[in-house]
Length: 248
Image (cartoon, rainbow, N blue to C red):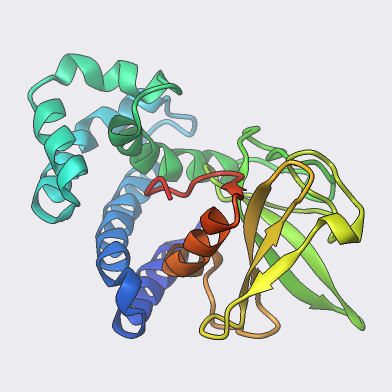
C-alpha cells in the first residue's frame, strides 16, 4: 500500500467532515488516526526486516494513546489514559481478539497498517468467492460496486488488511442466502452512492459503496460517514456483519 492511499483516506475524511455534520467528529477523529496509521505503515516499509513481527508496533502505542486522550471520544480517552500506564498489557492486547471494545480499538488501530503492509508483500488470490478475507481470514467491513460491461461487479474489503476480493452480487456474506427477495437494499437520498445490503434470513447487513455513482468515494471512509444508515438498520433489527475501526 502506498502512502498516497493513506493520504486519500485522510483527505476524504476531512472532505466529508465538512459536509456530513452528523459524522463530523467521527470523521475528524478518524483522519487523525489514519495519519498515525500512515506513520506506522511507513515505519514498517522502511524496517530492516522484510517480515517484521507485531512486536514492532509496541513503540507506537504511546503516540496512539496521546492522540486518543487529546482528540478521542470520552470512553476511548479514558481507556487510553489507563492503558498508557500499563505497558505490560500492550503486547497481550495485540493478540486478544476478545478484548472489550474500548480496548480492542487500540489493537485494531495499529494492526490495520501492520496487516496492510503484510498483505502488500504477498500475492493474494482475490478472484476466489468466499466471505472471509483470502489473506488474513477476517470479515469484510464494506462492499464495493464497480461497473463491468452492462452490469456491475461486487467485491468485499477486509476490515483488517484492506484486501479486496470478488464476491457474488446476490449473496449474503454471513449465511449464504441467495434469494433476491430475502436480500433487501436500502438507499437514503442523502447518500445515493452508499446503500445497506441486508439479509432477512440472518438479519445482518453490510454497507456497499457504489463507485459508478461516485468515483471519488473511498469505501472505508464513506462507510464511516454514513452513520444514519447504521441507525436505519438498527431500527429495522439488522445487525452489522462486521463493525468498522471505531466499533460502529
